[in-house]
View 1: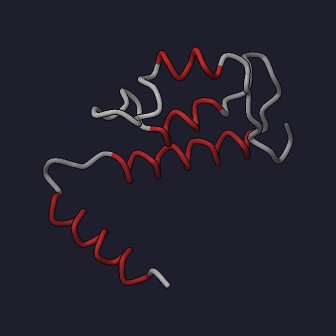
View 2: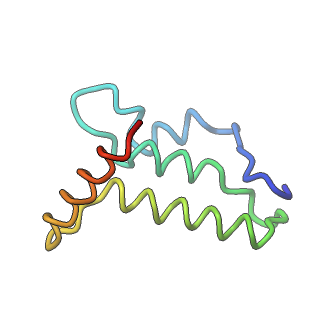
Length: 90
């Protein structure tokens, strides 16, 4: 998979059931769809996965955590970050 994180479709339905579905109902899914999507892009165990692609995947995961989860002690910083992102939008 050089240069491509790729995706695996096998068992996608089972994985969706295990992870709380698509979130279309009243309760949020057990795992956020962003995280679920990243997990679905992991290569099979034993596959070749270049270090640069692994680092990119981890950076995407880290950024997703920052987007999805709030730091209890840093509500003001989150508000500033959100406001800054709004001002940058075209």
